[in-house]
Image 1 (cartoon, rainbow, N blue to C red):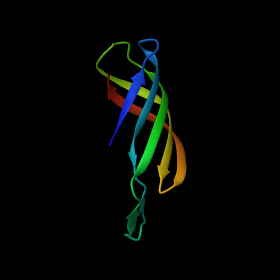
Image 2: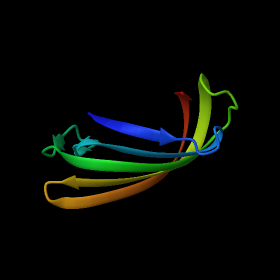
Image 3: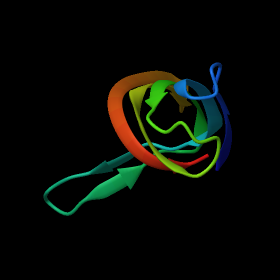
Image 4: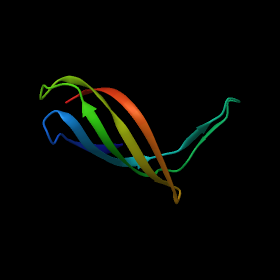
Length: 88
C-alpha cells in the first residue's frame, strides 16, 4: 500500500514522479518453494515521457524507474525501463 505524485512541468511530454509505501521481498524457486520477508518501506522515482497532448484521458508513458527499499534492515535498489498505459 502506498501513495504517489506525478508532475507534468510542461502539461505534456516530461513526467516526474515519486511513490512511497510498504515494501516486502519475496523469493520463489522453480522447485516450488517460496518465502517472504517482513514488511519494510520503499520509495520509487520516475522520469518518463507522456505521448498524449490531452490534459486528461488514457495515454502511453515510457520512462525510467528507480526503487529504493529498506527491508529487514537491508537497503536494496533497482532500476528499470518501463512502458505503461495510464489514466491522467
